[in-house]
Amino acid sequence: MRRTIACVIFSLFSIGGVSSASAQQALNVDIVDRLGAVTLSRDTVGCFDVLAAMRLQNEISGRAFSDETRNAFSSGSCVVAASQGSLTGVQKIVINGAALVRGTDGASNVLMYFPDASFDSDFTKANGASLAAIATDLRTRVSARENCAAARNDLDARILDFNGRVEAFLAVQSEETVETGSRLKGNDSMTISSVRIAGAENDALREESEALKAEAAAHEERCGAYRAGLVLDQDYMTYHRATRAPNS
Image 1 (cartoon, rainbow, N blue to C red):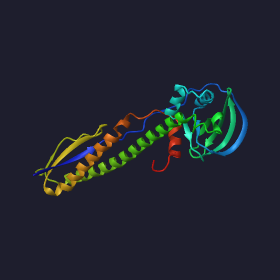
Image 2: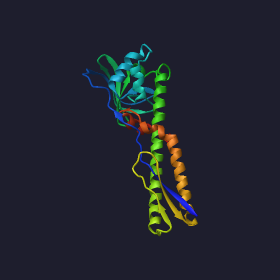
Image 3: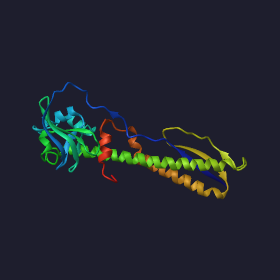
Image 4: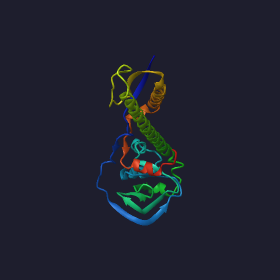
């Protein structure tokens, strides 16, 4: 009776592309005060893109946020810096009339700009809750993509090991006991290459093959939607990875 061993091959996928911050423009910066090192006493909205921070500062008083501001949070140009986060080199500044606080995040070493109107207030918890929800959703989706990528790396390594053991097994078999099919490699999607081998001693390899195929199919169902990736601010992933909660 003939048995079947299937080699499962597929390639990695990435989280997605990275976009640069908004186009630069001539900005007049006035330093009002130097605060040095600061520990955030509450969750605080901040931006890597200074233009997004300026726009947010101007919109806070009206309590109505533009699509541009919401898009800044959905692309990671603006985030919510968590309470007890540390900042160094903090300065109160005015840029083209917009009052901001800027400082370097202690965890990621990324420069951030905070609207002055929200820096020492409960804005994020109250009026800024809708923006915080967008930031939380983005962090959740990026974390899920990273988890999928890590699981994919592990699965790929185990598939490579399995395929190597199958090849080694086939190398010592006679032509009378082995019938090989075509082997397709390097495709973006999962491909299956069948090797028919006679003998009950191959059950373990066959069962391992089926388990790997099932795991690959489950991963594709869970993570296939992430292949398209995300377009993110150029500093977002640095900040995300440095401030991501363990096991999230």
